[in-house]
Length: 357
Image (tube, rainbow, N blue to C red; front, top):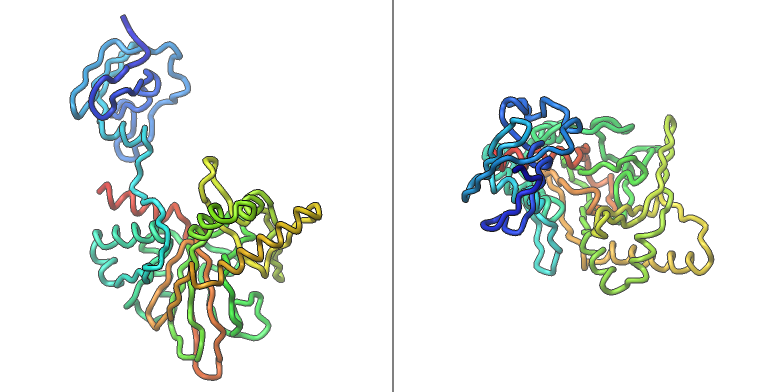
């Protein structure tokens, strides 16, 4: 007699109830999926709702199943366990503490050794950034490095943008002014996930860099100032950028949470946000919360300061970290950075492939 469920009584899957349709659409034989791209060769929505299991056997490594439609196959216990428990190779975020120090990797190591590249990408996801040293201090080198990871994302600034002081800029980044801690491009849909900034020259007085962990700030806010945390995670503000050829605009929460209430993204840029006209009491709380967030983002508690030197690349999570710089004097020397964006599917996909290879 067939059954539509298997109740596992031992091993890693003990206590798990496996549905016949759920198992059937995970068959991996050559009759069911293309062996090169692992895409299904059939439409799972058309499987019989009453599909059952005629027979199964279980050992430490595999579950073997015969289905009522004549199909059969075996399933890795480890693969099932990882999928059911959503175990991923992408590391969990780590809080920055007072012992946090700059995470630096050598370009020659990470591009010549897959183990080092795995370590670098894992560190990136744990702390939200890495700094790569000993790259060529040449134009377009940031693109060369980024494309070793995957495709570069183009925007209205181009595939590559130059961070230099210039007259009549379309963004304050292209001046010598101090830039307080901020997110890049909070007005985009979606916001660029990862930014890379490459130092070609940094000979002027000033122009030091900083990174701030929005995730650690969010955790602190939730614990110590829940009223501020609540309004910053519930109120949508307008982010807007205006240029000659384009107006980019989006409404979003300054601190965005996922469906489980966990930190997902921070968008913070006082140059580009416009608060909605809330009720007076709510507006008062919001302005206090935003001011307090600004103070946290520009304090030393959640910040790491460093100087990008010639040949260094700062690669940081633009959904988690804020970045800034001190003002500099272009009369004391030349300062030239080049930057580009990639998205998280690029680095996540690269890390998963490297780990599973």
